Length: 345
Image 1 (cartoon, rainbow, N blue to C red):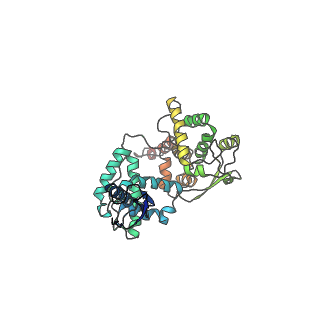
Image 2 (tube, rainbow, N blue to C red):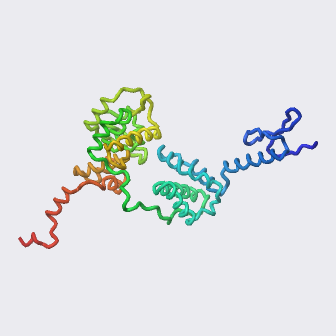
Image 3 (cartoon, rainbow, N blue to C red):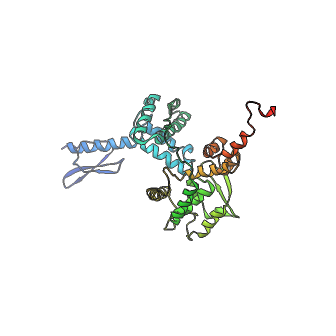
């Protein structure tokens, strides 16, 4: 019997029957060579390979190029992980031709994402596609960025503010109730305004001369933050461990962000059920808390910007926009004179 030759397969014989080994994938095909079952198995394998290997001119090819570029690899770890999650979410579109990536498609994708995953994730997906498309424009993969001009999903006016500042009572309660492995990273954020990624990555060697020294992951700015007396007390009272980082798990190992998130969310949910804290309390809200307290203490926006490690005043304003400036407004009203009454006295 003549044996059919198929490119990319290595044939071998076992007990008088012919089988095949798929060279590219390294998979041994289980069905006997040349049978209908063999052909179906081979087609299934080839289809999987086509899906796994992004085709030229496709979404998958665009994302693969972006992931391999310095624009992606030079991002902070937290940002890379977040971008990767969004691109993984779009894996079903890997074989979609880039010619079909139009503003209309982006708008439809945005609406589906918002319906299934919420406003923030829909906007996050759009942002990642936009960044990848800008990379694609620079390298001749795509001509235009179809995300430009497509509106983001707006937050409902009646929706609660995201990452609201913590109240003083909530700060006290959380520090009292949390176990030490969670209490320390929360305290570090509460008294410094550092982002979660910076808090979890903070090394013991960064604390010296009564200050915390840190180059922020997101902006790359070098910070030198004096240690608040209350924070110093918490640091001194924390159990000793051999991890290189200041904050550590109960196993004395550095926190992973996913591990910390899981433990933190569970602990906060317990406090919420008992009525000890309010709704929508997030770790990032501590950054807003610090910005708010600095403004209420009378510091100007530029000081807030420098403390929080922001490059622009706009973001400093964002983190302090809920500050209670009632005292300052009372001082303003003493000088406000629309009718010229004071000039007549």
